[in-house]
Length: 362
Image (cartoon, rainbow, N blue to C red; front, side, top):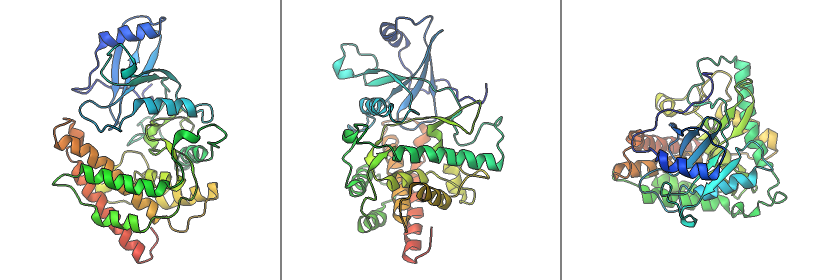
């Protein structure tokens, strides 16, 4: 069915050793029949995602990117264990089947940690919805709020009762994030990149206290959810838990809004769009904020800080990827012009800061 998200051929330089992986999997799962087939889901810019298929079973394999990566980044072991811990209290997470920890194993399967999880077969709403999926304005609005409700439900999980107090450091999250992302950006800066000095200074000078501590996803977007192909308004899964932790819910919402390109945004921002938030019926960023605050009961009279933080954090992520390309650590051409995206995001931050100083609502 064409609506269902399907993998593509594997990108150059990102292939796996079929024979080695096949041998390993048939040791782990003795019921596997037939030859191994490997394809790749090509849209992610961080960890790599593959579909492993046999005659009678399918798996999703997640591994770090190839090439040199930061020591603390792309932690497959943490991601898998977070998903396993959250599954009982937040069921919209794929089941983990096996976790391979390279340092604990005598088998060198692919020189890194990786895990295999359940494939949730459905629609992933990427940059554009599938052509075959025709939603009315009202249906699009319902889809939008259904997706937001999954973020709200995550933030309302009682992490203490669920035994997840060790998921993150909790209180002081806002301060830690500003310090951490400022450092990460400065470490990844290249000669042709935006400085973000004024933005970093403003964020440090305007940090609010944490409004609460809850489980946060840290990368909640439309292209990280799976929709039921029989009922496309129903969200059946949430993916990509690499950065999930305990933190401030408004910081999580600010992260999500950094990707929220709406219909009236300028051409450059439209070119960066990765999810279908431009469609008639999708909430605007301000409507998302209003909806979230009303549903959660959180009081926030000024959301500017969180929007500026989200854009800056996105710029830091983009710059880290560009840094790898700039220094020849990856040949992935998708990253070649990320420096321009960073410069644009700096100007977007500075505009919001100027508007904030004038007391205008963003």
